Amino acid sequence: MTPSGWDSDTRYRDAGHDEMQIRVYRDWVGGIAEKYEITREERKYVAYSVQAEIPLVIEKNKLLGFADIGVRFQAEDGRGWWQFYELKPRIGSIGGVMRQCEATDFLLRRIGCKNYEVIALVYADDPKAILLEELFPRTVLLKRKDAS
Image (cartoon, rainbow, N blue to C red):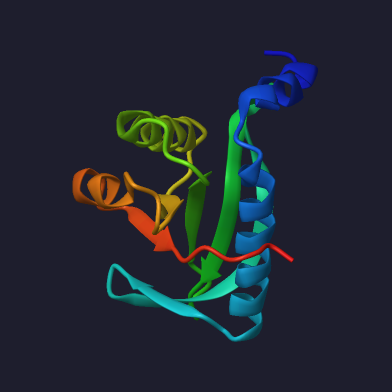
């Protein structure tokens, strides 16, 4: 796909994606300010930075895709951990969301990323949210509110 194709391919995306993305981005900016912590592999990590539309690039600058939101955490010893979020304001297909998360996971492994997780982020009131959570444990349910 060409760089213009990355934008053109969004023409069928649910219009609520941008609002959800800016909301999650702003929430994580607040989480970084509040020193939000997670524990993974018996190590504490503190939220360090957040980025939207992270390009996934392999050697020779080949663009493979994008992650909707990436949050970088850092431990006291300097080791990092990433949380990559696949945002879905409306679930069209549970399997589709799962496949997209697994495809992002595949791309991250292909570019050599380590110490990360890919999480589906959906609205809690979506009729398919509970089913997705049952089939895909790396699901976070977000309470719906305005992006502004």
